Amino acid sequence: MLDVSRRERALPSHDDPQRVPRARHGRAPDVFRPGAWTPMREYRDDDEVDFAIVGTGAGGGTLACKLAEAGFSVVALDAGPYWRPLEDFASDEEEQSKLYWTDERIVDGDNPLQLGSNNSGKSVGGSTVHFAMVSLRFRPAWFKARSLLGYGADWPLDWREMWDYYGEVEQALRISGPVSYPWGPKRPRYPYRPHELNAAAKVLAVGAEALGIKWTPTPLATVSAPRGASPPCVYRGFCVLGCATNAKQSALITWLPRALRAGAEIRDLAMVGRVETGRDGLVTGVHYLREGRWRYQKAKNVVVAGYAIETPRLLLMSANPQFPDGLANSSGLVGRYLTVQGNQAVWGTMEQEIRSYKGPPSLAITEHWNYEDNGKDFFGGYAYMSQGPLPALWGRTLADAHGLWGDALVDEMTRYNHSVGLKIVGEYMPQQRNGVTLTDEKDQYGLPIPRVSYSWCDNDKRMNAHALAFMGRALEAAGARDIWEQTDDTCHLNGTARMGSDPRSSVVDADCRSWDIPNLWICDGSVFPTVGGVNPSLTIQAIACRTSDRIKQLAARGELASPPRRRALAAV
Ligand SMILES: Cc1cc2nc3c(=O)[nH]c(=O)nc-3n(C[C@H](O)[C@H](O)[C@H](O)COP(=O)(O)OP(=O)(O)OC[C@H]3O[C@@H](n4cnc5c(N)ncnc54)[C@H](O)[C@@H]3O)c2cc1C
Ligand code: SF4
Image (tube, rainbow, N blue to C red):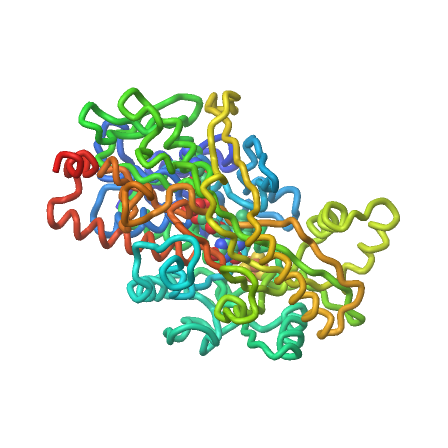
C-alpha cells in the first residue's frame, strides 16, 4: 500500500474539485472520512493499460470495479469532479446544481427534451450521485419485447441470466425493499428491510387500494440500517441533489472505492474528446483534456460509458478516414433510437399536511401497468410512484407546467406542505428518428455540441393519456382535490448504441462489444434496445457485471483482441 501521509500534508486543505483534480499524486478522496485520502495506483499515459473507461457512472463505475477486481489494469476517466459528499454537499437546491451535466446541447423535434438536472450528471459516480435510488428489475418479457409483446426489439440477453446479475447488484448496493415483491417471478429477499412510508407514499397506497391494484414500498439504493461507514437514511429528502450523509449507495461510494482498492486509477476532471484507432482498425487509446492540456492514454481496450448523449457524441467525434461515420457505426445506428421515459405526473392538494419532501422522493410504487396488459390501448407499460419535490423545483413546476405566476404562484406555494403527486416512469417506443447528432458549434472544450432530437409517437401519447387518467383517479380516490396534470416531463436517456444479435441492426453485441472494433466496448444506458417501464440504473449495473464476466471468459480463451469480426464475416 502507498504511504500518502506526506503528500497529504503537502497539499492545501481547501481545494476546488471543479477546477483542480483531486485524484492524483497517488491518492483519491476517501469519501467516507472528511479530509482523508485513500491510496490510488497511477498509470503513466504511455502505459498501455488493459482498459481505459470513459465515464464512472452506473455503467462505467461498475465495470471499472469488476474489471480491476478481476486483475485487469484499469484507468477510468470522468469529466466531472471527485466530490466528498460529507463536506461538499449542501442542503441547497441551487448550490447542488453543480452535480448536473449542463454543458450546452441543442434540442429540437416535436417534443424537445429538457436536459440538465433532469437527465444526466457530471461527477465521478455519474448520474448515480444525484439519482433518486429507485432500483427495479425489468419485467422478464421485456427482454423479448418484439417476439413476446409485439413491439420494439428483442434484447440479445436472457432474463434468467439477468435475474442472477440483478441479484448481484442488489447485494452490492444493499437495496432496501419489501420482503416479497408483488410482481414478476420469484426473487431473493432484498438485503435490507424496506423504508418506512412517508405521508406521500401512504396517499399512493390508499389510492391504489381504492382502485383495486397492488402497491409496495419502493426498493431503494439507500440503506435502512447501518452499512459500514454508511449511516441509515435520515429522510432529509435531498437525494436528487446528492446525499450528504452517504446513506445513498451511489457508484461514488460503492463500486468506486472497491475499484480503487483493487488497483484501478480514477481520473477526475478528465474530458475525453476522441477515441483513437490504429492502422489495423483497433482502438489504441483516448485523447483527454485535464488541467488545461490534451493528453493521450494508451489502452488495449476502450470502454465508452458516458450515457446516451455523450457516448454517441464521442463515437461520432472520433470519426477518421478509416471510420468516416464515427466509430462502431457501420450500421448507421450510433446516435439513433434515443429513447427516454415518460415522467408525466398528476398533482393535487390534501386537506391534511403531507410534507412530501420528507424522505426519499419515491417511497411507494405500483408496477400494476407494467405487468397487466389487459385494459391498455398502447404497447409497453409504466410504473407510478409517490413524489417529493423540494421547494425550488416545486415552484418551477408550478410556473412551467401549471402556468402559475405572481400572486397565484405565491398563493399555491403556501399550500406546499399539503401538495401531493404521483408520477410515472413510462415506456416510450424506440424510434430511429430520435437521436443525437453533431453540430458545427463548439463547446468549452472546443468539441462539437450535440443536437438532441425527440418526438413522441402516437403510442407514447396514448401511454401518457392512460397514465394521467389512471393516476388522476387514484389521487382523487385518496382524497386529493384541485387535481392537475403535468403533461410534458420525461426522464432517463437510453438507446443510442443499442445491443442486438445482428450487426446490421445494432451497434454492440450482448457482451457490449462493438461489432466493428473488437477492442471497443460500450457499457451504459445507451445499449438498451427498449427501455421498459422502470428506472434503468439497476439494469445498467447488472449488464456491467455481466460484461465483466464475459470479458474474463473471453480473456481466458485468448479472444480479447481478435481481428474485426465484421470484416472477418464479410470475407466468409
Ligand atoms: C435526477 C435523476 C434521478 C434519477 N433517478 C433514478 C432512479 O431513481 N433510479 C434509476 O434507476 N435511475 C435513475 N436515474 C437515471 C440513472 O441515474 C441513469 O440512468 C444512470 O446513472 C446512467 O448510467 P450511465 O452509466 O449510462 O451514465 P452516468 O451514470 O450518467 O455516467 C456517465 C458519466 O460519464 C461521464 N462522461 C460523459 N462523457 C464523458 C467524456 N467524454 N469524458 C469523460 N467523462 C465523460 C459523465 O461525467 C458521467 O459521470 C436518475 C437520473 C437523474 C438525472
Ligand atoms: S433522504 Fe436518505 S438518501 Fe436521501 S439525502 Fe437524505 S439521507 Fe440521503
